[in-house]
Image 1 (cartoon, rainbow, N blue to C red):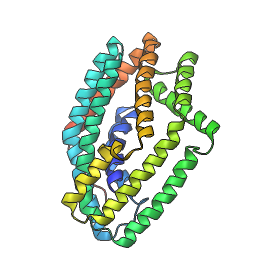
Image 2 (image 1 turned 30 degrees about the horizontal axis):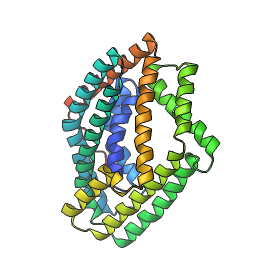
Image 3 (image 1 turned 45 degrees about the vertical axis):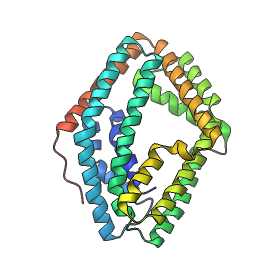
Image 4 (image 1 turned 90 degrees about the horizontal axis):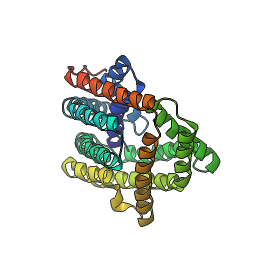
Length: 292
């Protein structure tokens, strides 16, 4: 939902931009993330000039906070992850990384909703209705692109996507590694549809909050909790399936690491070190003036 979800997605864009590889691409993407996020926001709701100006100011503030407070923490996290990776990954390492990522995400959610709430409370009834209409279209597009109604295509897409994620870190995967990933994808295929339905539930709850709560000081923490603790409203079977998914994903990561060649592990270690350095450089840079 916009602009809370857009701010959060933008923050993740700032991080995921590192997957582009190469210092110039990484730093350019991060330094121009505000433009991308504002573009993304237009998919959800049209803001009037005053709201657009406020959103721009809040986004610049969020970006500045992220650069100063979060990037140094990301660099430290990656440096430690690199040290663990060199020794070989065990389940405790994956659990540690997951806990670190959840903590970072919680901080993002709290900060993003705090800034976004000041814009969200100014949305008119017509704008909120327009947001709901756009969410229906966005979800329909998501369902098509992820082949939620076509299992064979969905399995191929998900396996290809996960293979690429591992491949980006390790280099070319072996046939055995790809087969291991495909087995994991097949075992958890049903969760794709469940997660999509849960995504729509959280969207509905978020829009209802935006419609009913007009005090930004009260809206921000309630929206943050919706993002940070989605289990609160999830069906029991979905919670069980997600817990199983996370446990099996941990085993998958450990298995892939154990089957990695020296060359694959060295590539992963080098990439982690490069990303940690990029975060350190970006954190030290002065913020770039927001584009009009």
